[in-house]
Length: 90
Image (cartoon, rainbow, N blue to C red; front, side):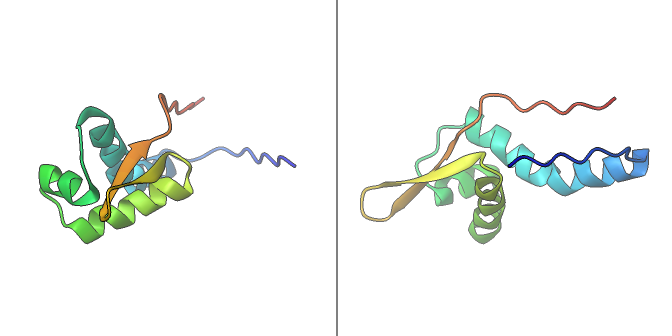
């Protein structure tokens, strides 16, 4: 079942939503553009805390944009599942 609810957003609401997801989508862009071997490697390349990067990746996973693949015994590698994200503002 698909339910679609459409309503107008104020410019302030749009900016607030963009800022809320800016970190996660910036991370998604970095994941696409950088070759990473693990979550720790991604955090190191972004100069961010591993825990915070992992939490942001979990949000992207819930949205269906990222999945985790296990490589070796300990490495968990985040991989993108999307090629393009389009925001439509009318």
